[in-house]
Length: 302
Image (cartoon, rainbow, N blue to C red; front, side, top):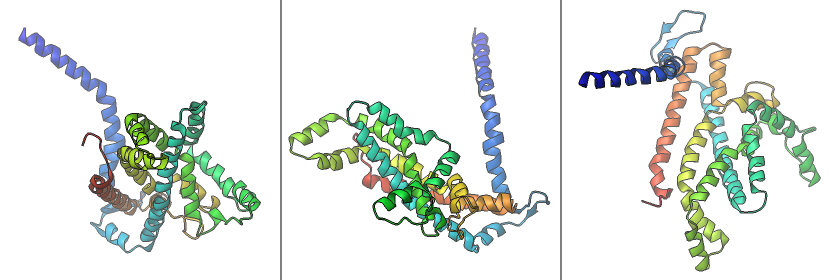
């Protein structure tokens, strides 16, 4: 009897392991393996077609003496400082707007979410046209109200803000998450505040914002992570599609520089050290956000 139970349990365990085996193989080959190999590479000099050479921490020393490393980091932080707040504010604004119980709300929710599922290449190509200083629709509309638009993607001053403002176009995921959180806020709090004479802004600021703070906390972390790893938009839109970091390295994002080191110049060891420094930066920023969260994130049950 005991042997039968043991054999049955063993068969179930084997069946379970067999079911997860495809995922396990994929994880080892395409996730864990490359991660470990990247750490290994960061301590080597390797140009793909040459033999690997152990150089210790030389890649990291070289990195901190590289002016383009600091420049690409500055460009990326500048982009994140604009795109993250813009993405959160636009997502929250749309969520509050579409939370209203009016006819056709579901249609508008779909319309505002659709840009998020458009491939980034198509979105970037569309915005290159919108930002074009000669025939783009944005400068055409600005001219109609008497404002002379800048050169956007062709300007060293405007190229990063232009790419960051485009981020508002894809605020659909933030909007959906905020909408789900709004549904969870007990309506009794808004009703009680209304009875006490609070106006719409006071109810929004003192009830809606605190209740949404856990959602903002989550979105802040994920948006910061995404912003610091921006690549495709910069690769396609830099200088209106003229190439890496154009114009004059003004759009040389960190991941773009990392890609350039790895796949244009085949400095795989140096590119790996760049990637691990970025990982450390993201980890540190996430830790800081977590540490400060107890001062501004409100949990109803706490």
